[in-house]
Image (cartoon, rainbow, N blue to C red):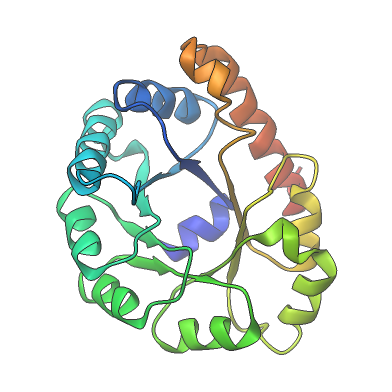
Length: 217
């Protein structure tokens, strides 16, 4: 799965999507070329696990194995298990938790914890992470990422937070292998209007930017 993710180079991050629109958005993204779809936990909600499970199941019912599904903003071992039971294939976190990484790997899922510093990135990878998420990436800057990649060039990195089609090639040039985003891909107004054609168009724009960053455009 890591090889497939590195080849795709892109993760669509669904944050705060209305439950009833999640499957439709996923379908639109799929038609635009997206193959990795992450649905995040809303940690403010008491029913966060049940909501995420329903959303994952809805997308899987619509697209089958066409879309590789993941869970994001995963903070606890319990949430790892719930995501796994709902069909998630990978786990993404904003932080580095060795307990979450270990639980993810024990269940055979791909692990992508978040890190900001060289210490966090190295610890996350040593704990079993498959790819380390740099977050918030745009705030770090491309120069920071290049310097980080110097001694840590053995660690695959994914950038999220402030990723756009315009800066995607710059992230790849700085040394990341995957980018992920939500706002420029699933605008609130397009979701509310169920303008799935617009979301498909935006997906194609993002995928084109990724291919350019990978030197494949």
